[in-house]
Image 1: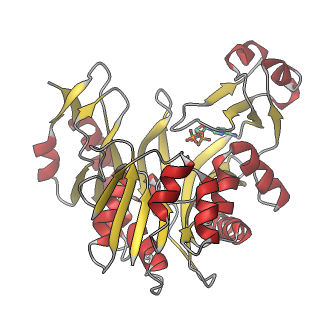
Image 2: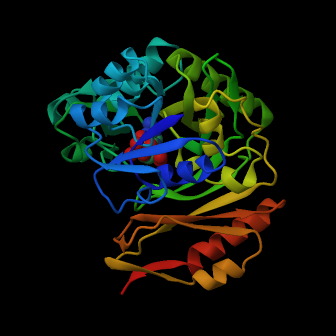
Length: 373
Ligand code: ADP
């Protein structure tokens, strides 16, 4: 089988690491020839994943194609699918998810719990919906990693609102942010990974560290799982889907957003689950049985993020200490240069005891620093 990946970032890199266990020829399309995936695939093509011709030419001789980021040319994927190339997930699912407006509308139309919203084009539109405040304003397309998201607490914040097609949605009073990865194969069989629980760094709006399985009451977990399955069935596409959800102060469950691909909330599954999210996607694309998602041990993920004030060739301070820590697994993404807030790698820590996990996660966060020389 010849299988292509659109995008060459760290998710693609970890996907390629898992591909080495199977008989599959791997292809990557990405603009940056020094990207994290460039040297782990059989064939690298430099090209723009948002360009119709680049994606179509790349895909037309492949058996199957997948994505590691949503901002791809969906028209080209549709044409490839019509010509018999298998696309994971289906282009129809990417199209819904790619834009936060169509994504929210999809939740509403399918009875998936997600906070109330309106669509806005201008700041005046936001001013006309002050009754929704406190709210979160999200650009329809083009935002990533918390950029393109603004909290609008009161009318004085409306200045920060986007003058572009956006979603203005009611702010949820969040008790926990969780994510659950659902796998679905071509015949509609599903497998659920245990939910993960995240802590967010409010300054950068980036994932700070994460624990899995999430510590949530069983009754809430049932709702979380039912909502995630319903959502993926409604998308009606094989592939891997990370459903990000909020649990509010009343233990109600709200879908924030879905990623139709391998996801940063599942990095730990490489070491901490019998079948990783990456292995699972290959099983789906190669038409093999779904894997066992059970956790081997509870795990934490600490992101290795470029330190403020440093740009240039990356230097990892404290790496040796982290490598000496029992059950800590270091993943560096092979990015030569760092800049403030850039995701440079992650560390997975495993331990049967959650207190120990949290303690070690914090210690690693404070030990490992990405600077530049
Ligand atoms: P991105 O796609 O850039 O990651 P998200 O939509 O996930 O953006 O939003 C980033 C963060 O903003 C979330 O992780 C959450 O902490 C906060 N957030 C988003 N939507 C809401 C909401 N409706 N209520 C409260 N907080 C929210």
